[in-house]
Length: 193
Image (cartoon, rainbow, N blue to C red):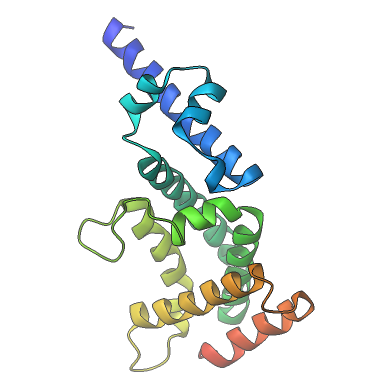
């Protein structure tokens, strides 16, 4: 292995450490606790080293969001592929999405609530974000209904899921009705055969 390859590997490892530490700190104490000073202390590198990877907290949030988008896409696809039939796939997708948001609140915030400097629904949208949307579209496109654009339907369905996550986390929806909300969303929004 050349010196250059070793340095690139070490740089990539440091970057993964920074992202993992930021994510862990955010999940434990919230995003307000994630500062470059605190991260530098936790990873035992100087702040200039941290800044050589990320210009600041915004870029770190973006890196956590991209990692989270990849994980969410995997979770949604796995759940949907394990189900048979459109209704079961959509129900599995909903449960996987809601479960991901519940288990990873800081990552979910990085994806959809905080400014990570990422472009959404644009030409320059990063691939992990496009793939996360594609994971939803794969199951939802088949239940959009005749004459309804699958992408547009997926956006509306996703907005409904995001609303459920946001309102539930804020304590605005009673948790005991979560399953009935899932059934209502699937039965009323999706066109099922």
